[in-house]
Length: 195
Length: 195
Image (cartoon, rainbow over all chains, first blue to last red; front, side):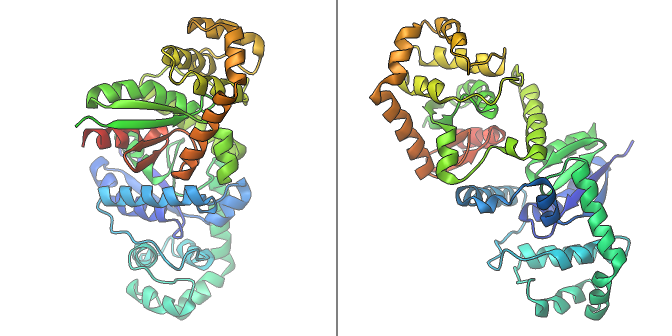
């Protein structure tokens, strides 16, 4: 029986980016479905009391080295974003608003690459039209989408649901009831999907 | 050329315990030497601003599940210690004081097992004589050893040296200049030792 991996992520999380790039091959190998669940990492941190590892300088330095090692090993092009931290509220509202749209993955591709491959300052609204255009999304329509109550409510609901199930950071995966935290647990996720 | 893995640990860290039990097989497979470096995790936290994951309830819950998964996979008998947290200052001073003693590994075996396999309340001084006896260590001699200035200074020096090299938690490994944090990075440590 083919299984599903629920993938909770925020585009501001470089580990989420690496996981996003690795997941399709894992799904292909296991015949699994990826259930993309955009949530707001800042909301998760606020709800759980957790913080970014970058707030502890030594931990932030290690996390960068470690993530670069994983990206290299798995062939994921990765660049640190010099404009970080970037508030991802609008970007994640966009993801929530597009979750049922055929352009959802194209949007995630464009935003993740702009954030962690090129990288661009997505905190600057002037950068957005060109990034959105890659996904065939009009900037004015996007502005309206992320301002919609339904969009805001969906992002909030996904974030709250993840916290209720035990999430405290990104990326977080569920295979059934089993939770896995971190891009470095994708081998465990793959085993669970193949089981 | 045979290499060395420097292993910085605190007996109060369950991940250090799992690493301690896994390292001998890794050393045997790679022909490497283990350089045991007892340090004080509380001192590392104080110096770096880092905290135990257990301070964030959701993160603590995940860390427990994740560590149990790793222990099971690698065949390491592991039990949560219901008496935790236990102040490890005296235990780690003992490790520092015995670092050049032929009973060093026997002491670590006894203390790690008492903490994470049996488990006992090593915060209770009445528990110590029986644990020390397994390593052939007299309780009064131990009391004198951990009170010695040279013992205290050695633990402090090891802790400070680890922090100076980038450590922020336990276990931390170095293979040459490359740092690895966490028992879940032992596969990377093994690759570095085999390279």
